[in-house]
Every structure is written in structure tokens, then in C-alpha cells.
Length: 464
Image 1: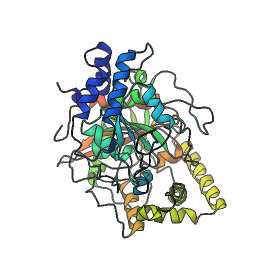
Image 2 (image 1 turned 180 degrees about the horizontal axis):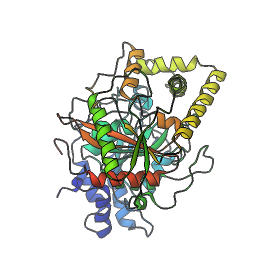
Image 3 (image 1 turned 60 degrees about the horizontal axis):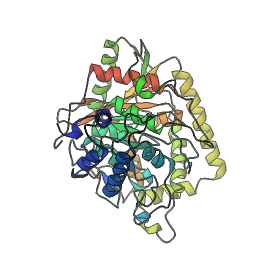
Image 4 (image 1 turned 180 degrees about the vertical axis):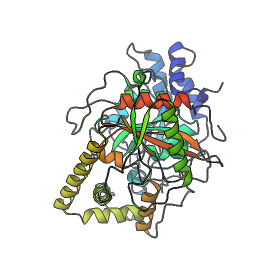
């Protein structure tokens, strides 16, 4: 059996038993061709060096189940000595002197990085078409987007170029590519994973998370990433056990809310997204859960406040002096919007988002989980959302593609996209479950129950 057919946990177990070495895994993945635009920069030699060090030092007594398993680092995370472009031509030759905490955490967990996975400029769009690399595409149809902004990470895992990968999510950027690529995409609660040392999102929308082929793999990588750092502005209470162990719990009979109306009004929802949501509802009911229709918990006027914050966050990522002309039209348009926001206007927008979140959390408090579609349609063709000539139209198209995901960034709730549905022509369609803040343990237990009832792990894209 080819090594990439094994799940990440199976590969880690093979390393633990001595059946393969970390270097064997690195060499296997390094030899696989990237035909999906997964990487902006590869670091195969550095991964080999890391794998050799792991073998020489031996497996630590406290090693986690993913020790020795390769991964990749999204190109938004500064990595010492490695070109880090943030998906932007303005940073096409930038090499940081220091790594951020996520990179150091992954390295310390004994996971060699094969490279910097592709992301759009500053991680802003929901498609991954950076000017410094080819577009990231879903391996289910390589004319179609892998989604974004963690599109490279998702494309790599879905195409068997990585066993598991971290991503980041400020408005759906893990769950969107998970849906496009037929993967599990887990966005944890606000504060579950530290943003140290940069703390680049003062609003609290964004968080690192995980992309994987199975729920257990996603949970195991979250065990690597999770943890509070001194100075974190937000934090979640420690889990009662590992998230991987939580996967083996019986979730019990749950009360699950559902809604299909988009948070963003006047969006056309493809029938495949509705079918996936309906099928998932019936599956949850067959598992013994009570599924109830609820009103959309976040009002339409929250969208304007989210956009204000999003524009300001984009403006916080400037180009190096003299390189402003290398920024994409969408980035310049959003940055101009952000610079036009006054301090009091931003403060009021953040306050209103907090109020919207509080209202949604109160409305959903009686429920253990919430079910929605992940996206309004299957993965679209490359270039279908991007519009450099009209950035406003580009942004509107992105909102129509992703009318649910950002709700759980506003509330800080954990959310997971599961690959439960495929169209007649073989395109993946995700469904999304969310849980109360800090209840990832319940969320992964429920997700594993769903996965066990309707497994997708043996479903593989062309060229696998």
C-alpha cells in the first residue's frame, strides 16, 4: 500500500512501530508531483534534515501520535530562513529571521514541513489565486478552485501531497477549502490556539485550525496546535482530555438546531447545498438526535459591521514601501475602505459584532450543535470569483459563495465542515456543524459519529 493512502494517525503509528521512519515519509511525499497548486515554496531539504534529526534523537517519551508525520505551513506564517510571501507579489522575496509560534509548535511536535502552502494575498479572498504561484485547485476537478484562504493546504491533503495540514480561518478560510476539496476542516473556538507572537487580528475573528481526511486526524493536529500563551488576548479553557480521545466518546442524544437561509441575504443557494443539508439532517435524526429548525441567529445588519472590520484588518497588512503597486486590486480596494474607517467607527463596529454574537449565542444556547450548509454552491471554476477590474464585484461574489461560514467567526464558536455529499458529476459539497464555545470535544465526538455512519475516507479524487 502507498504510504499516502494511510491516514495521518496510521502513518504516525507506523513510525512508532518502526515500520517506517520520518525520512521515509518525507521522501515519499517529496517525490509526489504538485499538480494542484498546493505550495508556494517547497522545503524538501529542510524537511529531510528535520526528519534525520528526529531519527537520530529518537522518539521522545511524551511524543504525540503525529510525531514523525510530515505537514506544511500556510504561507501566512513567518518561517525563519524560508521565503514567506503572505500570498503577495509585494513580498515575493521576503525571508523572515524568526518563526511564529505555530511554526515552532509544529516543529517541536516532530512534524517536518515540506513547504509553505499556498494562500491568496494576506489570506483575504475565499479563493486561492496568488500572483506568486499558480492557483490552488481541487483535485476533484482541476479546473475548479480549492477555495481559500487555506486552499493550498486543502489541495495538498486532498491530493495526497500531505497527510494533514494546519490552516487559518477568519471568515471560513479552513471550512471553505475543506468543502471544495472533500475534506474535514476544523475551526476551533476563539482563543483555543494562540496567535502569538504577532496577535495580528485585534477583532478576534481569525484562528488557526486543521485540515485532514478524517475527523480523528483533524483532532490529533488540533492537539498539537492548541494551548494558551502568556499575553493571549483571548483564550479557551483547557480541554478535559485530548481532542483525539474525545473522538471516542459517545456524544449522547443531542438537540441540534438547523437553518439553511443564508446569513447574507439575497443569495442563491445551489440545490446540491440544500440536498447535502437535508441529507445530513436525516442522518443526524437516524443517529438518535433531535433536529429542529431555527431562525437565522445573526441579523443581516451584522454583515456591514463584519465588512468594516474585514477592511480594517486588510489595511493592517501593508506592502513594503515602494511595492504598493504590486498589491492586487482587491487588496488595494479593501485597504482603501479600511483606511477610510475612523477609530470610533471601528470601535462601534466591533461593539456591534460583540452584540450580534451575544444575541446569537443566547438564541443557540439551548442547542448542542447547529447544522448549516458550508457553501452556497460546489467549487466554482478558477477565476469565476476573482474580478481585478471590479474589486467590489469580486467581494460581492465571495459573499455569495460563503454566506454562512463567517457567522461562527463572529460568535467564536467551533465549527467543522464534513464531506458528506458529492454532486452527480463528482464535486464535493460540505455540510457544517458548529457547537457552543469551547465545546470542541463534543463537536469532534459528534463528527466522528457522523463519519462512522457515512464514511468518506475511501473516496479519493482522480490521480490519487
